[in-house]
Image (cartoon, rainbow, N blue to C red; front, side, top):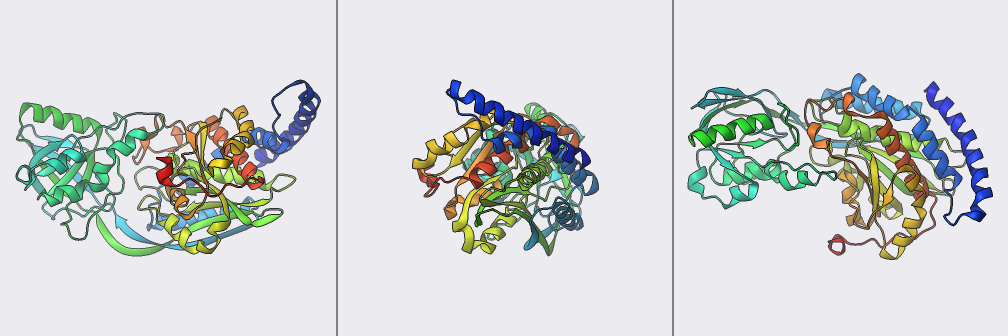
Length: 475
């Protein structure tokens, strides 16, 4: 914290000099210089270690924080303490009811024709196997769609193996193409009489670490166990099936559901100077899966939005609107914190001027997309132009906002999507490998600068951003 304060003082002096230089040269140059507060925020963010210290603290002092677990409440206490220590104008929490699920153990092996152990993990929310386990032949499908098109006779009594590879892409778009097997696979397999589901992990890595993630059941369909195997193990099973189609898998899992518990959305505010009732929301989620330490998902996001808001809190002059940081509960198990937030703040959603969420690791932000009124797009683009100094170009009007914030456009709330480089995000996502060493401090600081700049610009903007584009119009 001492280093942060020293950096702040140095940045204030530098910004004053920068502002003077800009005024004297502006008459000779066509491009309009960045407003002093926007330049100042960038300088402060890039010079400060506050963001990295926050995510380091969260991963070391709390670690894994699955919603509904004891560590989840430790994380809530950590967040409240940090936000108060940072001196936000208001810090509070709001209750969220969450299901409690315990991972238990998961073991698998090939019994025949080539006996070998496999590395698997239960998918979030899965039921367990019978105590003695399950032993059955494997039936392989390239995708969820291929399973849906299969005949019941080839699936009944088998363990379904969905073997869809996740494509690597800067936007992470490969995840959307393959995640259906994880979320819907157990239901589709059970419809055809399968006894269990195993998927190739939804990830782009080659590590022998399986990726967990939430799956879903349907009330009128039998619940079967669901697990993910690591990519090398999926390759191994493929090679076995190429030699002999009659591969038998043994599966034993002991996850369990244990009722419900209370978690919390933790909220901090920088009170606006003239329009405090209007809100610019910066979101991230506080919970994580239980295998890694939740550094990139979403400790990085927690650090980014918190540090960005802190920079705005410490400006000599606050922006017009309130900047609200929301650290959502239970994102990983169904966006429950976001749903609870909408219910709790239903009466003030019309006063939400802009919202954005950081939930894609800590890769550098290269583009800013929004969802605002078509008539306001060019004006927003011009307003955000100074962000180019931080390497952020303006994109299009097709933003969703990300994670919980993605539910706000349906309520008429304008949103932004700062696009991060997610090329390697799904190497670590939902694995034991989601740890602090995957975060680059300089990239994290660049994210903080971008969020601080955009939040400030929106909090002080005079633009009319509503009505936003509908989802149909975006498509």
